[in-house]
Length: 461
Image (cartoon, rainbow, N blue to C red; front, side, top):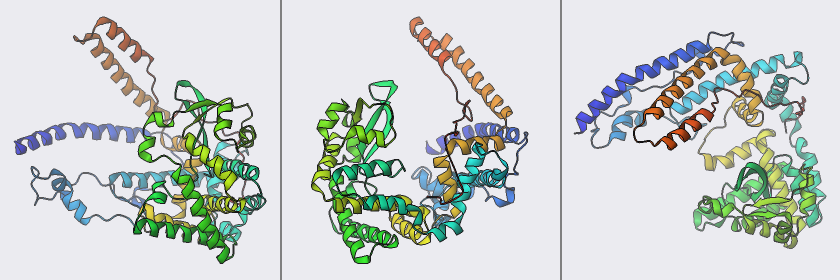
């Protein structure tokens, strides 16, 4: 049966893939009709995009015995994973090609920024990317950009001071002690609720702290050495840095022990613990929650939260009382350095990459423009998206895509109206649901407003 099935599959594919190719070609041609500036990267600058190639087939393997090896064997034997990546394939190729297009959009924003109004989103986008790309200024600054953050930590002498620093660092996007985020209320999707959840670990997962055996011990020792090197780069004496790094591991281990495992967190009920603020105060009394919420910028009183992992918050509260401010200061410094090292001078970047590559599998640091592009996309995603759409996706393409969706909707409506197995009441509900379905095509109707965002030429961190 296998040869016949394979023949049927080949026939089906041959009959449909050309249609898909025509659709893709039509979209690509349509996107090129509008004014597209700046000029997108010339085809010669892009690596050939890998498509289905008969040369990838391992003809020494029977498709009936091992179809995966048959379809991919020759490719697996000859393809190499680029040193800067942990995987290889068509998806990676497509992402690389698109990043060249995005890079041209960002380069245009950089070139035009001085001529644009200060409030222009495109100017802010260009300033952000240009500042990240200014390696000369970054190398000259060294650790100077984070000096104010470290100085604030040095002044901590009490549990209240630790909480104040936690809040201050969280406003800079630094993961420390626990996490705050506004998110959907599990019991009322129409409203948001304040979520408080576990976090603040330097290693990727709590299991790295709790696993036993030589490999786990070796990794933790490597982490201590990594933290010590970062502290030394930031100005600590080597002896003091090693001692502080050991304290950081010990404190983070306590946080890890109180954290739920990944498996436990897959159960929605395990992180569903709504409570009034009075109950939160009882759960974690060491934290002045009203002051904390004000410090992170919440102007309206918080009356209800979801304490995703109550035991973790209780443990943080206890550690604030039982752990010396000296240890907390070391931990806070380590969290600042972990968050900022990728964007400081070369010694910090190299140290960060050398340790993180243990987990990513990458053997080579990405070029600076790729790192800055991804950071820009992460922090100013809609601003970049708006500029990208303006250069690559004309309104006519959206109109054509909407026509396709309208055709699909009409065909779906026609089927619903004539399904013999569907009752009239169910049909009415299905048609009503179809009528209320919206569509999102290409980009939003209303872009995010960045008017309150301030950008300036200067230190990137």
